[in-house]
Image (cartoon, rainbow, N blue to C red; front, side, top):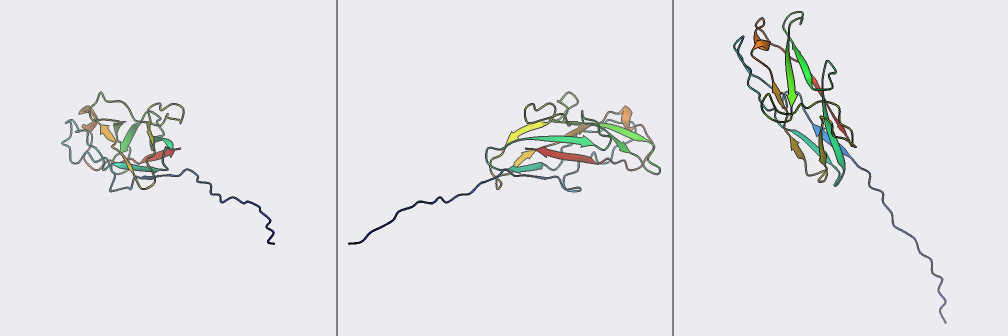
Length: 155
């Protein structure tokens, strides 16, 4: 007669959350283009920021200009020694009255960041950044003005 001894074992895997963001300098710049001194700069959208997170992973996208302003109010520095600045405001939609997009969001409260929930690492979600600058802000010496914004995704 055959005798058997039985035992069991488990097959396991632990999946951890992951998020990535695509905000490549050059491809994702907010570019006001050429503006005649003293005229209003049109709010232009960037190439989209894309966020890819694990399925059902909550996240917040925060933006911080180089001056570390948490409300998304930055300063483009001018030519030469860069002492002249043009202020701009990062926004969640087009227009000067649209909500600010800054860096006050946490996973428990979106603040002025943008909240989302991941659809899967191969299903990026698109967020568009807008910026505004007033006509008064552009009444400055001619030349190129630039600032760098840091994108932070907390998940």
